[in-house]
Image 1 (cartoon, rainbow, N blue to C red):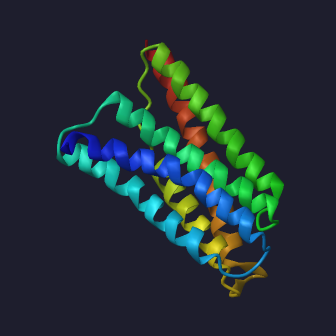
Image 2 (cartoon, rainbow, N blue to C red; image 1 turned 45 degrees about the horizontal axis):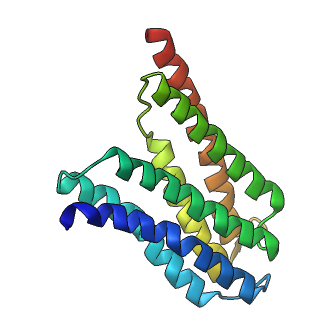
Amino acid sequence: MKRYIPDLLAIFRIASSPVILFLILADGSSEGLMLIPAIIAFIAAWTDFFDGRLARKWNVSSKVGAFLDTIADKIFITFIFVGFTYIDRVSIWVTVLLIVREFVITGLRGLAGNEGIMIPPSKFGKAKASLQFWAVGFVMMDFPLSILNLTIAELFVMHALIFSYISGYQYIVSYFKSKNEI
């Protein structure tokens, strides 16, 4: 049973995504606290931390688990940011840029895998995921505190977007370096 727990955590993240989207759309407000979707998103975000950690600790890492973990993050962020855009909490251009980056890098990693090239996750990629999860929380909590005319949520969203593209650049560079070494 222990070997399935990391995969089940990633599956929970995938399954919670449409539920969170539904709750965001049902709330529909462009401001204010979104407590229930925030609690579910918080729990789901923590599964990202625990699924990999448990898989390594228990030595039950698998290709399916790595795939589920990667796809779960993308589905989770895509669903939530689409919801945020629909209710006008996040600009459409931010959501589009985040989703485009995810598709491009997922495609690149798939291409690399087909060519026998392993592109390991970068520190910026891990920071990107963490910042995206924090951004989700702050957007849902809607703290009124501003710094330099930006809310805390907007600052986290911008940092997540910046780190998304820095890590994306690192993946592209890593791919071409590895390709030239073959």
